[in-house]
Length: 595
Image (cartoon, rainbow, N blue to C red; front, side, top):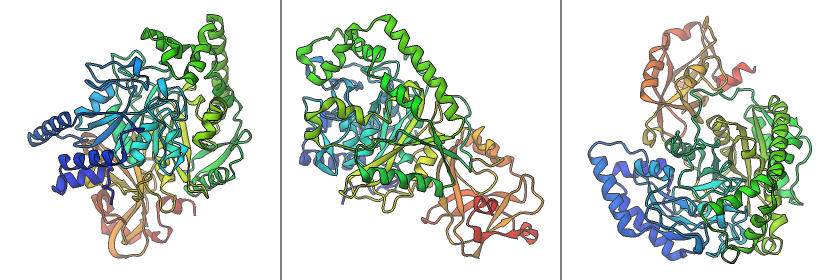
């Protein structure tokens, strides 16, 4: 059986002593040797170096240091620097060995994570397909005849194969999302500048993002919490605002009124409609929007200044060698040589107009739901028609960074032939956590959901084994997302991790005379309902001030959840239910409010 590599399971195994990091990495390298390094990996970190890293983090842990990613294995796309390991960008003639790791790698290693190796990619991160590399062609973990997606091909496959807990990719046009869809995993594309790109070989420096692949949204968010942060060494780094709006309970999600294209893939079209129904079941209302400005912006990416920016990236490294570059990549990039400054400014003005037009559509919705890709292709099909089929894959991804949006791709079920389909939720800049909470709920609506191609079921995060430095808190009423007191969590920079339900035995009441209206949760062993809760994470200082502000008859105690775990959460003193209305049968506060 494949060892579960999600952060919660590994953290629990390490904490109990059931597993040691050295044992885990022995297993990982044995599996890689069995499968073969190519085409997923370009280079592996030397075992001696990993042994040194393990000794280092074990000493730090023994000294009392809390390492939030202790012993967690991860992979790095080979256009991101890892000190002492060659960076090739999938071009052997371009290769160099950096003395320093990229900022994002430094932050993850400081938290105890360990790099397994550098992964394959479409050369110079140019492509959404995974077929443009001299190091081989990674394929979907579900069918070797089909593409893995790119450009972060090896990064996605390494996670979907159960070789690492998470991986780093890059995303300029969809490279952190399309491979996630084709391999049944999560692809988180942060807001531009949220994660530093210092130490990343640029494709389009003004658009590039470091992306995160993981088996679950929960793991991707935990990695993001460590990876993000302002970096003065990155000219495009940005600081996130201290607070962002939470998603309303009665949220609106955008769906194109026209312009959806599945390229003849009826199964993909049906799965997208199913995702719409699943979001509606989660309390959303589908809103038909004009998709035209988004489509028109997507077409700009491989025109004018942004294509010239790819050429500028190569020139910055004094590397402009047609003989050393993949022919398809060179055909794309070399066309930029004739772009003038006038052409560039015309494109900038056009993008500004399209972004302004899109604002009218954002006023209608809280989040945008799109297919991650309209279909997938066999490797031989892609090699025969590399440009137009690649363009098809970018239909729903190319505009995102141009318009400064956040996005997260999650699995959306399987076609009749067993190949996965994915959907993407998009929000405005710095709404990464806001949309991720909903993405996790959507992901978990899938029956028999599994992690990549491992066959392992989606893990239910265990608050007690969390790798985060935050405290998990279950809320049941006025503090739920979109409810009147949710701001008290948002102001403390809490983040929504997931939704869950209580174990049987809890009774649920609408308390009398409370403003705003609040419920009371009481364990009496009689309640037959499973009451909906949201699990939030808040740091220790924020947790203290939050608890201090809770008025009687409410308080914080231990709540048992349906999955058998326990978490701190809102409970009610028994005397208050004497005048309260029993609403247990509604199964949660939102359902009672909608009565």
